[in-house]
Each structure stands twice: as C-alpha cells, then as structure tokens.
Image (cartoon, rainbow, N blue to C red; front, side):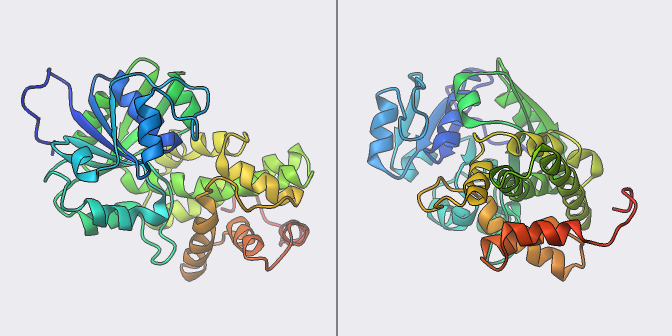
Length: 338
C-alpha cells in the first residue's frame, strides 16, 4: 500500500507533514527536506513557528541553522493538507489526543509514521495500536534506531529503521526518507521495532542512575547487558523477531541511549542517581513507560527485575541502593538461562 501521489510535484517528491516542533520533529523535518520533499512542520506554539521561519529553533536545537524551505505552522489542518505522508513526532503519552485533533485532516491512505517511542501508560497499548484505532484508513509505520536529534539536524551520518507490517510500504518509505548521511533500512517487524524503541528508554534511565550513583563502569555494562535480556523476553512475548531486537532499533538504540547524556532518559537517570532535582528536566519517555512495562511483565509472568526496579525507584518505593542490593542478591543461574 502506498500513499496517493500529489499532482504537480517532481518525481520522487512527497508532501510530508511533520507533527511536532521539538528537537526530533525539527531534525526530521530537515532530514525530509534533504531527501527532496515538500515539508510542512506543525508546532503548537507560535514562538517555535516564528523561530523556524527565521532559520532557527533555539529552544530545542540551539546553535543549529534551520535550512530554508520548511513551512512551519500552528494550523494543523494547513500542515496536513494534501500530505502524502505524516510523521507523528509527538510524545507517546499524548499521541492519542494529537491524533484525535488530526483525524479529520489526515488524507485517507497517507502513511502515518510513528517517530516517538513508548507504551501508552493507561492502556498498555503500543503506539501502532493507537493509530489503528484512531486512523483506521491510514497504514502505520515506525521510524526508529540509534539517532540523536542534533546529529540528524546537522546532517551527520545516521542509520535508522523504517518498519511497517507491509514490507513493500516499509521499503518505499525507507527509500523515500533516505538521503546523504541518512541511511534507512526497512523491516516488516513493526512490533519488534516498537518494543525495542520503547524499552530502551527504561534501561537508559537505569544506566544513568548507575552512573550518577557512582557505581562504576562494570555495573553499567552489566545492567545494559542484562537489560537487553529483559528486552528480548518481553519482545518475544509480543511476537518480535530476535533479529529485529539485535538490530538498529533494538540493541543499537539501547547502546546509544545508555551511553550518552544527550539521551533525555540517560540524563534523567543521571540526575536521579546524583540526587538532583528532577523537576524541569526534558521529557523522558522512559518514566511513564517503566511503570506500564513492569505491569505488563508481571501480568504475563515475564522475569524483568531491572524494569521492575526502575519502576519502583521512580514511584519512590525503593532507593537505588536497595534496588542494587536486590538485583545483586537474586538467585544465581547460568547466563544463558534467559
């Protein structure tokens, strides 16, 4: 399934609507512009719209020049008018509300590409399920992988995955999104790509907390490695393919997010481990995802002690020290017993 082509445009060029004027939305708008598309960027606040028109977005991407050609607007209907493809770059927990506002404006058949990562806190729904419910006439895809907004905005070499249940759609989207220094691989394992992207945020909080608490590089390496085991367990329960979880959207994204303070989730965990105030920190999607992921694991009988520990720490039920003690005193087993 492919989106209806808009007439009057050069071959290979689409009208791409990007919903979300934050760092990632702006970076992806720039990436789509480099790929030769007609780009419209929707942002809720007039300040962001005006800044992009001036060639900057200092609130989210300080010091990065925004190339001319992106039409920014706070009018959702205008942003979506005639769109061949829609990139939903909105936080996971607000996706349902944004789609409700967009429902009457998204062209029938235009692919909706999820560019945020998470699991809906109240329902436990994956984001693709929310799209299927909200926009049943639009195919759903997801863009994920090891990528920081500032790197993509600057045009630095980056590789990501574009996934859809229909392999042909995934391949077409990957081809259309790819540009110099942005390599897009395709996958038909949409669920696997979503699970990897959602859970890596939880482990990034754990990695940041380990670092912030001064527990050492060895502890961080152990946490990331065993966290990947939990990711594989939960992914398997959802039907994700092992090779997907071993790829860019799983292991690749996990390694990047767990190793740099550029990651909002790692930075959140770092502040948590250092005992610093958390109020005012940038949005960390792993915070709401931790609780629902722990609940899903418990309900399905999946052993996920790190996820459960992160959720308990965030809820104020245990301290980082207590969590480490509990994890280090768990019954011994063979490493391959996953």
